Length: 409
Image (cartoon, rainbow, N blue to C red):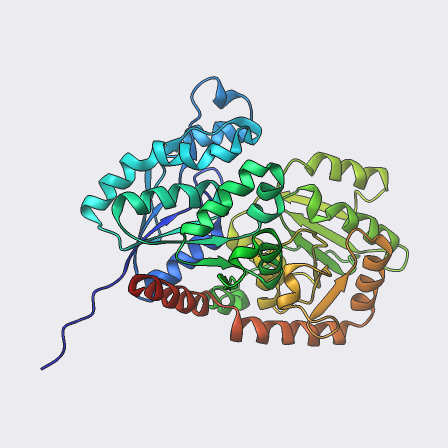
């Protein structure tokens, strides 16, 4: 007689980073992980708290107006997503207490979810505020919780104030598992929180291989004009630490050797106007194209149509966008000493440069552009590595193993 079917694990995902109506690629990596968990047999509900933005807060910026327009409940790829509001202050004021505020504002929504979906475990993304709120919710509902660190907690939050670092330490003390997305984050975590050095678990992010199987039939968004030369692409939030200005300056140095060189910047952010001004000041308007924010599949098509993907970003915990470009068969260029060293081997499947070094970046880009066959081979090796090792399916297996260990301990 067949044995009784094993009950599926029920997990509540708590992440303020998740696709929303005004930004469908925000936190897309969390959603991809959630989809892989569901495909692997985990039952999931997602709670993605959104800052409360009544008038006049909804008038102070485009971002805050976007907050006010998010529905309270949605369904993305069949996965129920709740967007309760919580009290968050502009410019991250009083951030060390943000976890407590998030808990107080979302506990009613989570309580209603628990009545119809008695979750076994809570998985929070980032320690503060989400992880702190998760620790309080887990205590209230008598279940364990785990937390994934993506970089913000160590690169920004832990440096804000002693109170913020202490809040993160409290989360780690209560968490059933502390997952980080790269070895770099583990090293930083061990230096900040030495008491937890044996509790950090590296679980890298991944890609969705099915999408890349479709790329062969996807029309490239990169327009190849008759006088165009090589195409370089970046997909990123347009913020200072992404090094997009370094890209522009490096490409300007290559303009005489490659008169038709083109650089496409996909994404949006507060550096868009300064970057456009830099392009104009360098006389690069005909070589640099800003296309703004696009959906995920369109971003992939830009990568697929490029010759090289370059993003000389520093303070980079992992960088899903790099492995996405690698899965498209492109050689990538990034910075030494960052999370990408977990998967980019210099001169084998990509190039590593010194942070904020225009000359070094120009030299590496020149090498790739002047050796197209070598660049193509790098791209093929990059694709093979990613699709063999860095997929959301492999990520989900590690997550489920971690969940099970927490539930039996």
